[in-house]
Length: 259
Image (tube, rainbow, N blue to C red; front, side):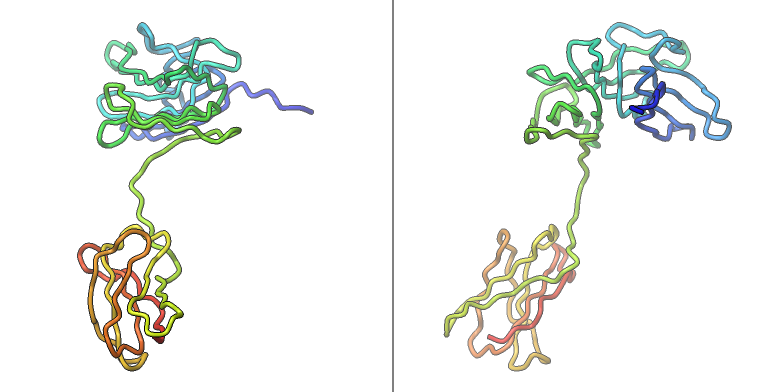
């Protein structure tokens, strides 16, 4: 009946530099370092029994997505709510002194205007030093520079939320083939090529011939937006388009069509 009592509520597990595990437990307001082999607690960050002396502005509550970083930095998304104990949610970076066992405030990333998420959320440190914060049940995600300047602030549709908002380089290579289309009109002088979802196409090579089995390169043009126009050489009967990347390597080939 109802929900079972959830005293711990793990919401992230990440490998530490020492090979052990960094575990976030929402309902104890604590981040744990756990020995990977024995399962023993090595140290606690936050909560009632913190192994670290918590400096000014370091306390967090109902946190999500704890991640370790270089130079003994730890990031969390500090929800601060459900029930509310803080005025707003924030991405939070803490610096850990493992000798003195002291946690100090490094930087925080609150939203303007204020948002308060009762669950979920994330703080992602990007390779260039920027920070992407997903505000969980408050339907926003924001990218900041390392010093807190806002580069991007996005709002999800009504009812939207993000468990985590993450940004990574992405390459699209569709499973289907590029498309080449000839206008229906007689005497058409151009073809249209596209490949929906392909991100690495830099150029299109048009191959033409008098038969479908004997095609040769006729011209190559740079990709121009979603759909690229290719002029049709005179006396062309069959054509196909080859998608090329910036090095000239073949990515995909369209069907061969009759002109």
